[in-house]
View 1 (cartoon, rainbow, N blue to C red):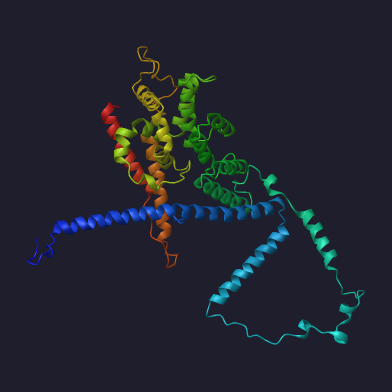
View 2 (cartoon, rainbow, N blue to C red; view 1 turned 90 degrees about the vertical axis):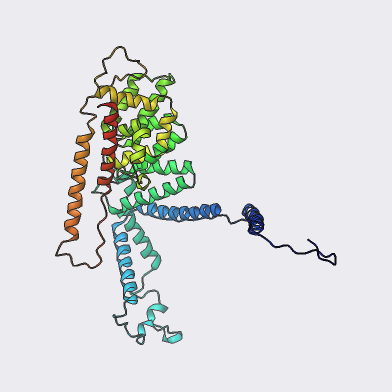
Length: 433
């Protein structure tokens, strides 16, 4: 459009024109942002890496300091350290409390005076004074006393750090070691993480370990495709260890070796490993076998379970079946179908069927009692309800006059057991069990 004088007339912009202009501006902003992210030195990933490295450095110093104390443990020195810490904490509380009167500062006595010249006392001038005490001789005598009293707790309590009769400082050292190993793993320093986890295994209790070092170590070995290291690990552990990461990883490694015709592997070895895994944790077997079609549609809040122990078998199995280990089972051809065939054949009494394909048939010495999930789930629910009632009684105890009581949390075990029961009822209806 043009005016009479030949000048260009400004047209009226529609809504489409505005949208087109805003789209071009947004594309330009996105390109500018991407360019700044490529050129900047402070991306979010780099910030997180630096934060993890700072935590690693701090934890390494704490572990080193505590390790030195454990190697030369002296009860007298540690008692003095404890009293000094309590006194410092008391002074800190008193300084923050406005109701406590601060002591008035008084004039210092003559014992604090620093006299010079002829006014100095005789014991500062003459070395033969009876009150003179050589600091070097005193330090030497103190060092001799500490050497006679010191003990190496790392050797005395090796393999017993998790026991109840071990000193509390031993359990503190395990806590710092686990924290350092997990930081190494998060920073993808797997060699340092493996060394730290192995140190935890050597120090922790062999019968009732209190750390999850063996679980994380097994996951590192399987993710790195090191079956020989995994075999050495479960060879060191007790055969009665019911850890789901150990038992089911053992079954997976033996199944893979059997299918690949590795030396020393056979169907009997793989079946024995799976049999031990099923007896150790029955929930994980059902979850692995029927997870894709049943459990995944029912189970919720599974991401909230972290580092479950053997005392929580249901939560431990849910965590295992929602980790990278389940993907390892699914990537091995026939592994999940093998577990499913074992369960169905045992429940349907098909173990002696000669017409069944030997590649999937079950030769496990399992019985229906070993696959009874209802009885195990009822015992778990009973224990969870009793624990909840004890917590409730302690919460409403009339003798407890504390005003800052925390509200009771929902018992997760009952919630997960209800979802597991629903999924298993669907499985039984589908297969007619």
